[in-house]
Image (spheres, rainbow, N blue to C red):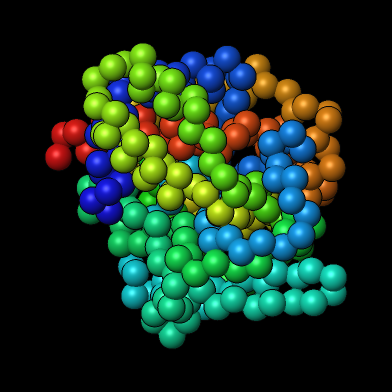
Amino acid sequence: MKFIKHIFRKVPYKVCLLALTIMFALEVPVHGLKMTKMPETMQNKVREPRERAISLKLPLLQPAFHWTFMSREDFLSGKLLLRIIRNSQSSEIVIFENGKFADGWEAMPLPPPPDRGEIYFGFISTHRYLTAPGDRLELELTVKKDLPGIGAMQTGILPAGKYTAEGTYSVLIDEYDTRMLEAELAKEGKQSADETEVLLNNMRSMYEYKAFLESWANQWSLKITSQKGWLPAEKANALKAMRENLDRRTEFPAAYTDSVVINGNPSRRYLWCWIAIPVVALFIVIFLRRTLAKR
């Protein structure tokens, strides 16, 4: 967590501004959980399986980006299972069960402050698994009791039960291209060459040889209990207005209608989300850099 804070504090304001500029210029709505596959030009060209770490978020329907569950103990009392299916062969990966994570798995860091729940709905592995562009994915979550949670703009409950989803990778990354960030840091001129290299190496370690799983054909509906989340009312209203404006101006590109997310999904007009993982990374920087600077 310390090195993540280091990254966010070191990234200059102009880099954060660049992320917003890219997002608005592309008229991309920020619905990180309804993510389609990246365009083929963004996809990894290596077709054979390679070992990559995994980053995934539960396919919850309502949250725009963040969600946390209020009780870590209750959440982990269930079971989360991922299947990677390739050439009719299935590999099962248990992420957590019986109150604890499997070796090599952990939850993504919680957005501060700590009153925003006890466990984030995203998970990352330190262990690497064989992944390939043609893989089919299945996700199973067993929830033993109703799970209250909170997001930036809503609160709600994931009811007890068994949830399943099918999908594919959003994107597979091997070598992470940091040239754009390096150029912006050079223009800023506020860091030494050694500091810049440390930052770039940390960014590469966060994204290189990763498989991102956010492209699901079906999503799991929360029972929303309030339209108030952890954001103050003024910020929540501003974010809501921005999202509604972007949604009105955004049309789904016809070129990408082959995505598994789109087939049979009634929310298809919201699915063209972020153009590439680097943009996602920079947008996250904006939120966390400003938040952590106050701590």
